[in-house]
Figure 1 (cartoon, rainbow, N blue to C red):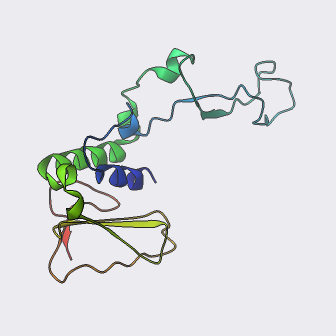
Figure 2: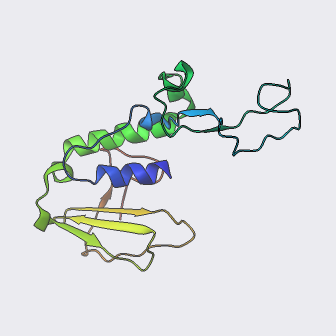
Length: 165
């Protein structure tokens, strides 16, 4: 899902904003302090029993969270290397091709498919991008006849041709 979101973001016009750590899947998880996530054991509230499990939940606002939550752990790159290289490839591709950043409105066409969990975009009949967040429901799009270089897929992204369709 993180790669689908990244591709969608990189097709946006103008400057894009990445949250620090997004390229390594940083979630800013913090211990649940709301009491809405039940504990697995019956040894009392969090911290009162040695075998209590603390559930980690995404922090809606980590401003006052502990340092462990807010620090960037660069070892996360090793944990999420594939996602890190995917973002790096998208950044290089976006830098190489001006249409990703500066297309005129009349050069952008949103493509429709029966699968409403998918998105297709046509940039000046030169670049086509497709995202499908529902792998159980294929999305089909019509594009002009021709040979097209695939530079981004579900595994890799960058400036090198991965395949030709």
